[in-house]
Length: 609
Image 1 (tube, rainbow, N blue to C red):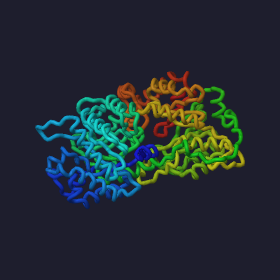
Image 2 (cartoon, one colour):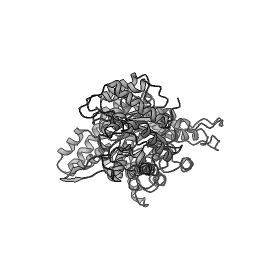
Image 3 (spheres, rainbow, N blue to C red):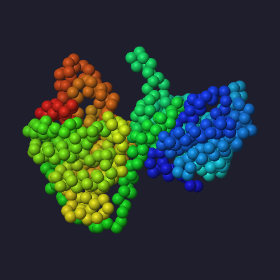
Image 4 (cartoon, one colour):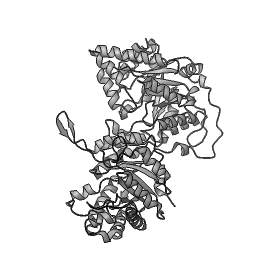
């Protein structure tokens, strides 16, 4: 059986469409009619909605067949039209989708009329009738949506195991924030039942029931145990009470923000459920698609044959920074963000202060949180030239295609900027320029491979260059990642790809850092530099906790900051906690990278003094 759904989910993050019922209601169809029967009575309206989602960027068009089973249609006197309605639903969707987009045959739970009972075999047979009609009409896969109870799931599995199903299917459940269905069935039990099924599902989903923010809590629990690709389709959400006002948070931007977080956690499909609109999908698509376009780093450098390459410059001979790492000496870097304007005099003066205070290098981020600042490459060059201290320059995959990124890597070699840190980068939607395009030709692992190749005197195409580069290759890691399995796996892949040192996100929970290190055996030989952020105030602590991805600020840290009465005392408290963190991890790490909050290098200097 060709499994086109698996192929698409394995290749990239797939964009699903949004609500059908919401759009039909907007067009004047009240809930006393069968929305599925509109495929027969008002096909142009259904087609118009599908087209709006396609125009918005959806890559899966979901047929208007959710309630087109015998039990549901009987409530409208349409029990004899099961096959006719389901075939019409797929036909309309296919006309819009063409052959490039997928058509999902939507199947909802079989629910008897009030006062009636329905045995599981009878319900399974009704599902088979609907599945058969959808598959026969040409749906690419079956999407069992809004599965609310263990009984619903049991009936689905009974149905698919009792027929010759020749197309893939996905099961999507309604859960609470603890990933439990209405009857208390938890995610572990759901996946056990799916694994034991004779016919295996291709993907698992979460849909309906929860708004975008609440859905993240459920996904955090599911992602830890899931052994199937995950599809996430939240409702648009409910209005919230904010300072006594009831405010709807359900803008396309709000919806998109949470979908980005689903993708970061590893969701392979994202879309919307009740209340979501083509506007939501359009906005989300613009931000998620750049992430989805990231090339698989395993296949990026597959061009063969290539020249044999040269021996890299020995690690200890590349820079002063690498020499200290190779000798096992303690390193201490400071992170300084480039200014938003083009004047670099103040930045250079701060770098001089850091050199005189004993820092080994200045870490230069590249557009952190998708901000637009003066070129980090120019900043790094000016600091090295005028301040007399080495830099560690970030190389971000967001803003340039592969050709441009390779040009920058060669430019770094030409300017003597030898210490590089490779990151995938934050999508533009997270910053002040949400309408900018993210390129993401490749992720950080792939770019590490490119630099490792340049260090052997070979360019991206495998052609020899006159002289090998001598970059010191670094990579980032997040010891606080929600999906720790993925973070451990990717950290190991970064090292295998050629990363020679690792720099972590700011660490406030040192135990989490040590647990992470224990799970990555390669760190026994690969130096790890711990990120240290001296909190400048209670407000700074709360911002880091709530707004900065990949940073976890424990309750105990917030409590200590809150106990300090003035901003000055809070700053001193932040410095002290940073010093304590360094003391606790000093024997396990190669060094630290101390951030200068709000550009105040005096705070970073106070930490190492």
